[in-house]
Image (cartoon, rainbow, N blue to C red; front, side, top):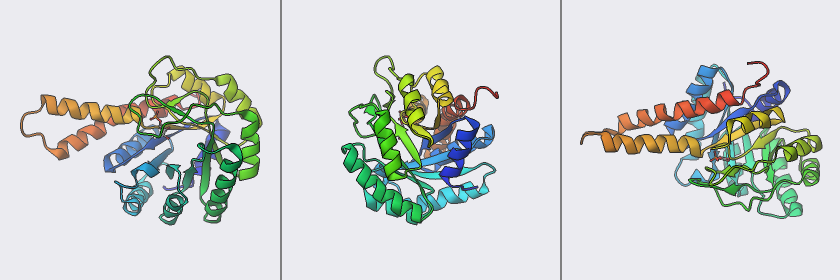
Length: 282
Ligand code: 13P
């Protein structure tokens, strides 16, 4: 069933587990995410980034996700990831997204608060929940996201930001990167503790790909409720595609390749869904 993202993340916060937010771009990525979540009996967040609005028909995509969600036995949320433009947010809300992320991380704190507050006022009127970010996630290898400067989140600024904007979830920058790490990951879990003590709303970790399993488990234990995953899943599909063409005869057919890519993505997604469960109750 399709549910509000806030409902999914409030339950996650209470149950001290994390929910995967998989970035998707086509039918196979959506099917893979829902298929895996159903097999694991876990909720899932389907996330479409504003950067894909040029290539994905947003209204058609929303209708597709809503139909698959309604058929599904698990809670599914539909999220707009990294939106920089108010128009994109209004478009997503109009076609039934259950949450939106406004990314004002490029602005200074005062401006980020001003713009984010305007978004929360609009989204909340429509019953849609809002994620926002302070600090900025840097970009590693193979990522499709904007370059961030890697500024870590300041706990006091986070407190002020949440109080003044009324956001529902906060993306905290603690050293993860969008994409694969090019060196040893340097993730500051003490900072996560401090942010957790400063704000009460569910926290979001961007840059799930390549983050060591142990760090991921600790991050969830320390209050991360949503983990965004894109690059690692995309790499699994792209690698499959490369192999299919290298090994295939002349007659590789797109329909087989698409189904193969979905199959290649699913084990990676399963790994994340399992990692984010409350390790105390497994
Ligand atoms: P990764 O590409 O590192 O998994 O990050 C995805 C993300 O955070 C999207 O918002």
